[in-house]
Image 1: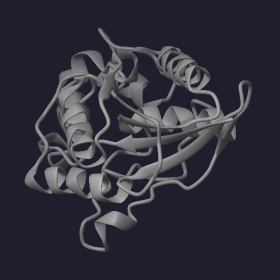
Image 2: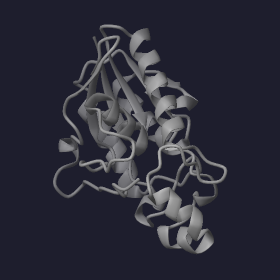
Image 3: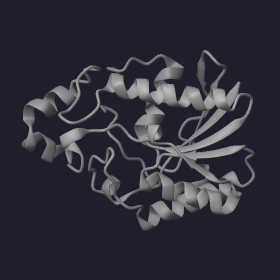
Image 4: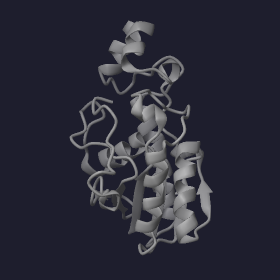
Length: 213
């Protein structure tokens, strides 16, 4: 049994502007950097063997703040990147609707096989995330590992553990700089605490992300 602590990156500028980030990037806000620093303090007393991160800068910078406190080396893995949203990356929902109304309508229909032009379908993205997380879990059997990644990677782990269909809305929010606990026994996923942001206090939590995505 491997324990995985999946961590969403700290708040970014595009989070606050409600822009689709995907595999483009925007910097952590001052609040996001503070959130990342609080993650380090929280994880200082949480034993884990290895610290992984998506190679996208918003995740890598969050991981750096953890590593400063815990002393772990950071292992980056591009398979932990956010879903690629093609031509919609960098846009608000209103801008998506104006840019390509037909593609936006199909995108919001949650068809698991539909990919926005230039992007990834939900089914392809889920397969990528699941394969990457299971490979890391098997590599670190019987260990606890921490992984700094993105909202929809967390979503994929949640669906793998709960059986929630790809075309169903997720009933729980995505919380910046939160701890999300999962376990993998070599064949099955299980979910523990979700969206744990106790280290941020009541005034430090930011929740962004449309549950329809």
